[in-house]
Amino acid sequence: MLVRLFGLLSILLCTEAFASVHMLSERDKQLHFSVSSAIGYTATWVLDDPYESALLCTSVGVAKETMDHFDYGRFDLADMAFNVAGCGAGILMGELLPPGAVFGYDKDMGWGFSFSRHF
Image (cartoon, rainbow, N blue to C red):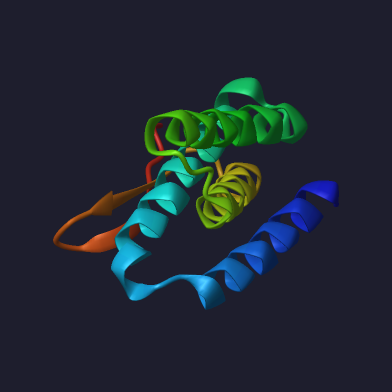
C-alpha cells in the first residue's frame, strides 16, 4: 500500500513540476524521469524491497543534483521532482509487472514492454 502511495505522490509531484517546466528543458526532464525509472525498476528487481529501492534511487538523484550544484551552481528542484517521479514509476513497475517483463525505450519506436517466458 505504501509503495502505491509513494508512486501516486511521485506522479503528483511530477505533474506539478510539469506545470513549471519550460519547453527548452523538456528533454532534460524526460532524461531525469527515464533514468530514474530504470534505476528504480532495477533496484526493485535486485534488492526485492521497495523501501530500499526508493532510498537507493532517490539517493542517486540527490547525488546527481548535488554534483550539478557544484559543477553548474544550481540544485534544480524540478529535476529532482522528475527523479523522484521516475523512481516511483520504476518501483511501481518492478512491483506490479510479472516476472519476465522488460521495458525499454527505442528512439524509433518509443517506450515499450515485452514479456518472455521460458519453458
